[in-house]
Length: 269
Image 1 (cartoon, rainbow, N blue to C red):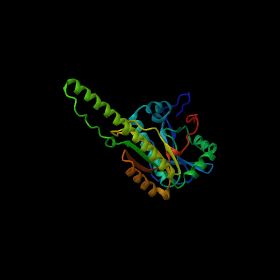
Image 2 (cartoon, rainbow, N blue to C red):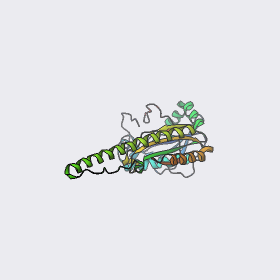
Image 3 (cartoon, rainbow, N blue to C red):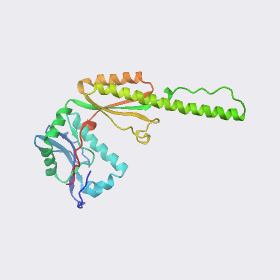
Image 4 (spheres, rainbow, N blue to C red):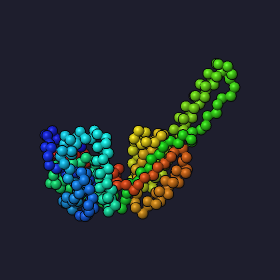
């Protein structure tokens, strides 16, 4: 989020944007970012689904501070995603990036008017489709087993044998990682060929993924609804064919990876 220089008052509410849709109905009783019910702001034939956000927590200065708090950020992301996910189950949605906040409904409506063609085109492109994620991790067991060198008695012999064994282990580990990387590339190519569109994101750090081994594939795939079963079947087939990579399939998701972010959007302008 890009903030303006002027201070923002700590009382009142701002408007948190969850996403843009074409219909006029919003999920009844669905809580928004601060627990307030979501509502619609309509303009130019489009509908922005928003919720009111107290400035004490979501104002310019407070939001900048809270975005540095990982626990707060996780809660906000979950609340935001819950709305976007509900919208995606009813039809196409252009998800807003996290922490897109406007001063009032008029500014939200202005965005719908100014970006009408882009948003309408994106909604048409996403209709009847959803995002699937496939993550791939190195499988240590697929690394060639290193046999301990035979012979070599004595202190010097034992030391030399250890060095040879250690070198072979490192070489095997590198070979396993290369094999996993090659397998991940092959998996991504096959899945991308089946999908309407594909993105290969940077692998997540282990501290974020929570996996015991390195991630070698972090792919997102836009798939037509009537091909979801086939996509899942292809992912299983590829997992069987590439034992050097452990694949993890998730979805369907709202199409976060297939929505272009606006250039230098001034959410508080």
